[in-house]
Length: 308
Image (cartoon, rainbow, N blue to C red; front, side, top):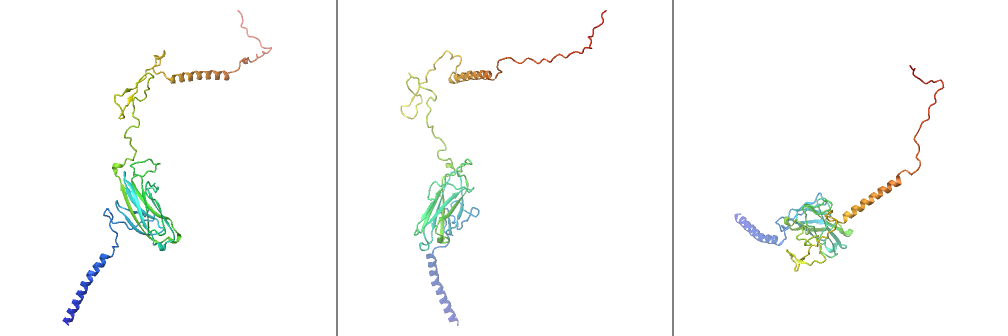
């Protein structure tokens, strides 16, 4: 009996030893079902929201790989700070060509925290895949994130941004077929690049050389004491002031004085003319009111004081 038991244990151990290498080789040959970490060392997200409220928030440097259906609206959220220029790239693996019934058009949109659609400065925002194409890629590059902006401008500001992926045009029979979407968020720039291009004037557009001074008719151009970087720069000689008999009265005489005096004369003439037109016409004026004398009664006697 012990001999049969020892023989059975030996056969079982040999079978396990034979099964172990085969199982390990099969495990090495089979692909891993879990997603591989992204470039930043963070495992990619495997979910996506169907609206702004349920959008999946991605950490900086995190990608997303989601299994979905044709016709679904997929939403992700990511953060962007001032000076950065984010780019969202999406690759959609389409269903097998034998199951499709025509071309499909996919669209990616980027929206800010106020749900305002932001313009794309680069990338293929709308792409159409042929009926035999295995995948389609869409991308969108935002404008540079600014540190501040006017309320009416709609410029991108620091905060959360949303990525929206949708199939905008697909045959009715293809809706519901399984697809896979892979999202990658990249960004360039940092806080040192927060000032947008053209925001500061590095040098004057026109170097001022005696600004506001005219050249006299008989004057010649003289070299400037501080010439401009261009070769052969010259400065204009100021023109002399012409003296008049009233120069001492009005040290700063110019055309404004003439317009002022002319306006005063016209105002006076207008006042005289208005008075002439609106006054009473000449002629006999009605006499003053004189009430008639009240008649005295006949029996009335005039009081006369007694004479001494």
